[in-house]
Length: 237
Image (cartoon, rainbow, N blue to C red; front, side, top):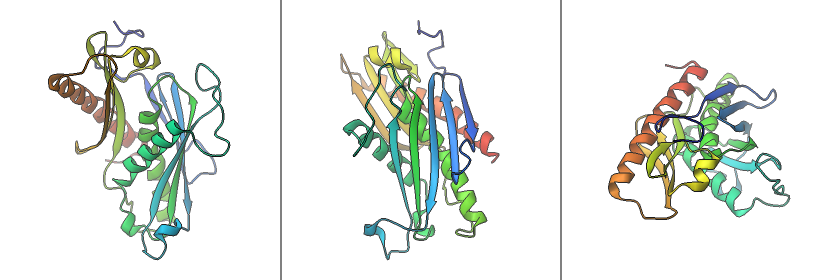
């Protein structure tokens, strides 16, 4: 039934390339099917003006799609991000801040730059999943530089899309499925099964509580698999 022949509860083929960028304190190239996202983490010895003097750290994110990452060329964000990019980068930042102990980071900032090299649906969820790997390596760098004494990530976090396509609940939508879905939802969740964000929209008919439950169960299955892959590439138990 699915355009690429996957089972309803099957993720696209995926891979993580840790340390993709030579000069960044942390980086990860994630491939989710035909969606390829590069996330780099930069560590700076400063915080935004509104954080100064508090002794706490900050984490923020920026998101963009390269001009021919999608089916048509999109304009570069020359002066400021467009509305969609701003909404996505705020989501990424919120998701990551929930698992970072900012109180113990000192007055330092980690900036996560998330760039879609190729987009076939699910760029925001792929960005969050790769951001955890990049942020972990940035923490390793900070520990090596004696900025912190331990990794300040409370637990892994990942994200995935789910939806209703041709009357069936499916996991990890590609572009063709997303563009025709009756319901589209992005779920961000921690390893312990706690939700950080659920973004769900009915495009045609409203969805029932039963459908919502099925979608969240599918999302947890996918996120559990992605977190296992994150931990394998990071070589952590």
